[in-house]
Length: 175
Image (cartoon, rainbow, N blue to C red; front, side, top):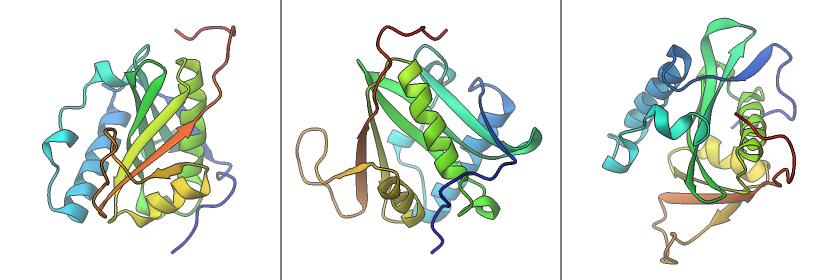
């Protein structure tokens, strides 16, 4: 398995885009199609993502492009789920671009966006059929959790991660 590189390719541009725009919707469609291939279906908890979840001030959706040429080569969403807590959703990188630092670039930009939204704690879930995602999260400082939010042990196929991100105190606020 290829590991992501330590620096993103120089031709990758990561930008915040409104969730209702074509880029984020395309990324989410690709991510969901891949989840269906890997797991057979999306469960009900995976359905119903909306612009209100991912647009400021409640969240952000970041899209990676090779320069400014469509289509996107990756993307990731962030939504606020509790005070100062954000949830990462739909990280996806085009298979042709995997192992080249795109995921790291997206997650680094996501952490900056989280701080701008006033979030200090991030969480995400993935599954055992996404080993490249697990590798990325472990390599970028995410802590693997072995229990759910209520403290119950997780099944082997359900993988949770958390990460604290230093928030800017007293800095300029985002829009």
